[in-house]
Length: 243
Ligand SMILES: Nc1ncnc2c1ncn2[C@@H]1O[C@H](COP(=O)(O)OP(=O)(O)O)[C@@H](O)[C@H]1O
Ligand SMILES: [Mg+2]
Image (cartoon, rainbow, N blue to C red; front, side, top):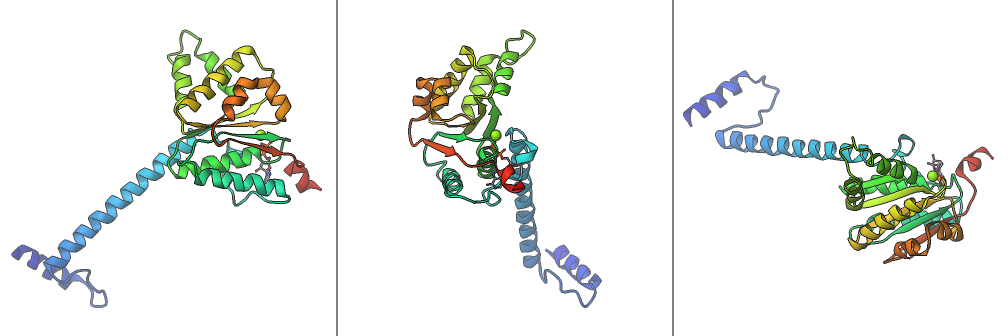
C-alpha cells in the first residue's frame, strides 16, 4: 500500500498544476483502473461486433450498388411504394417473432432489390444471417458441386441455404427454367418452411406467370404462414428520375 501512496505522490508531483489528476488516493486509482478495464473490454466487444457484421455483410450477397440501400432512402411517389416500404419495415421489426415468406413481383427498376437489401442490411445489424442470391448463381453453385474435384457436396450447399435466417432468391423467371431447377427451389423452400425459416422471392413475373413457372406446389409452400405477395406495378425508378 505504501508503494501505491509513493507512486501517487510521485505522479502528482509530475503533473502540471493546471491539470486535474484523475485520482487522489489509492482507492481512486483502483477505481480508475477498473473503469479503464471496463472501457477497454467494451471497446473490444464493439470491435468484435463490427468485425462480425462486416463479415456477415461480405457474405450476404448484397451487391455494391445496394450496400447503402435503406428504408430511409427509398422514396415514395405513390401508394404502392408506401405499402411495400411499410411492409419491409414491419417485416424487419417482426422478423424474430414470426415466420413469414414474401414475394416481390413486378416491373424492373421498381425497387425490389433496393428493399431486399434494406431488409438484409437491417437484419445484419440485428446479427441475423442473410443471403440474397440470384437463381442462376444458386444453380451454377449447385452444379459446381457435381464436379468430383469439388469438396462441397450438393447436400452441404443446400443445407447452408436452409440454415441462413433469411434467404432471398432473386431474378426468378429471367432465365429458362429446367425441371431440375424447380426441384431444387422446391427442396430449399420446403426445408426452410419445415424449420420455420422465411424465404423471399424477387421476380419480374406477375402472379399467373410465376405460378405457371414454379408450379402450384412451390407457390403453396411459399404462401404458408403470414406470407405476403407484393406487386411492384409502377414505372421504373430510373425513368422517373429521367422524366
Ligand atoms: N422508390 C425508390 N427510391 C429510391 N431509389 C429507388 C427507388 N426505386 C428504385 N430505386 C433505385 O433504382 C435502382 C433500380 O432499382 P432496383 O431495386 O434494382 O429495382 P428492381 O430490383 O425492382 O429491378 C436502384 O439503384 C434502386 O436503389
Ligand atoms: Mg432486381
